[in-house]
Each structure stands twice: as structure tokens, then as C-alpha cells.
Image 1: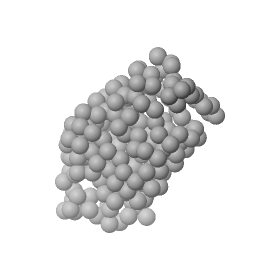
Image 2: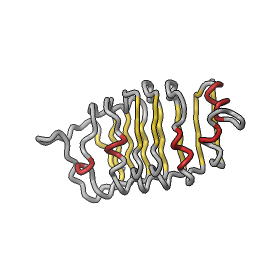
Image 3: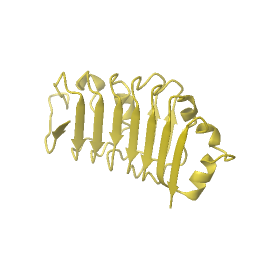
Image 4: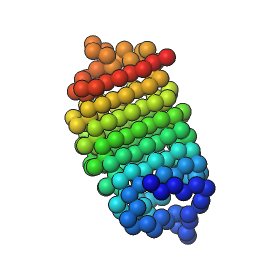
Length: 179
């Protein structure tokens, strides 16, 4: 994995990372209010790890266009916005998605056809997230869902008989840890 810290990589458009064969990228504590357009990322990128970037704009519309991505980690303070949207057809190869410490994140929309190969989803310490997206029920490949530091109410809604159970009933391994 390539670690670039602290380093600012910019051109006239704001960002270019010209490493055609790069497969894994970790951007840690490199402030950027928005991600560069997808064409500025290496085309063979399979893993991206973002932490402490302070993204103000939803990173998903950019990341979902990186067609080889298999693993995405959005860590502490990587995104300061309130809403994320995963579009239909986005993330065609994604298998693992980790969302951690997104302290302002409240709403998540997942459209049908997004993340068709997602196997593992982990949501940790995202206390303002109100509910899981309805579109999660369309991700039939999902085998493991871990939610850490949820409220009891959040857990009860996802439990069998709860109002949101239909979103997760197809997932074989569901672990919810609450305060």
C-alpha cells in the first residue's frame, strides 16, 4: 500500500495522481474539501483508504466510478457532510465497505443496482446515522453487516419483527453493538 503523508499533489485542476499501476491508496490527514474527478485516479485502483481528509462533499459519486475498487475505507473525519448517495450501477466490483467515525453523517441512500458484489459492510461510530438505507435490501451479495455503537432503538428496528428488519433479513451475519 502506498502512503502519502504529508504531501500535497496538485496541478492546475487541483489534483492528479499519475500512477497508472497503483492498486492501493491511503490518504491520511491530507485535507481536501472534495475528491478529484474519477479520471484523476489510477484506473487499476482496488483499495482506497481515506482518513482525516475533511471532505465536505459526498465522496460516493466519485468513488463509485472507480470501476476496479474492491475495498473502500472512509475513516475518522474523512467526510464531514450529512448525506451520502450510492447510485445504481455504481461500485460494480466493491466487496468491502468500511465507514467509521463519520460524526456528521445522518442520511444514506443506496439505489437499486449499486454495489452488486458487496460482501462485507461495517459501520462504526457513526452516531448520527438515523437508519440504514432501504436500498440495502437489494444487495443480495451482502453476507456480513457489522454496526458498532448504535442506539438500542436502532438495533430494535433492525431486529426480527422491527420496522426495518426487511432491509437486513437477507444478511446471514448481522452484528449490532449498542451503547
